Length: 100
Figure 1 (cartoon, rainbow, N blue to C red):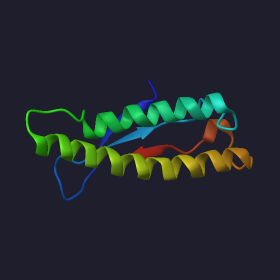
Figure 2 (figure 1 turned 180 degrees about the horizontal axis):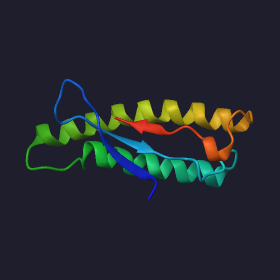
Figure 3 (figure 1 turned 120 degrees about the vertical axis):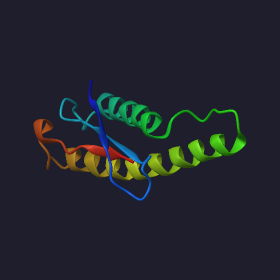
């Protein structure tokens, strides 16, 4: 599996992060990019949990977490893909995307 759950020290004891690896992907291709996007989506779900719950505030909190984590992760994703297109990163040394 390409995801590694890593505790992240922050103001909230519940804050987590997941490292999404891309070293096994060719990010210069659409297939590699799609796979990384799927991994990121899965990591967001791991960090924020599903947007379901018994109370509306739980649903809203999970959705807000997902939105923020997705935006931050996609910023990293774009940089990693850009580097792959520019040939700056060999596939075996691709940087990870950290979902928080």
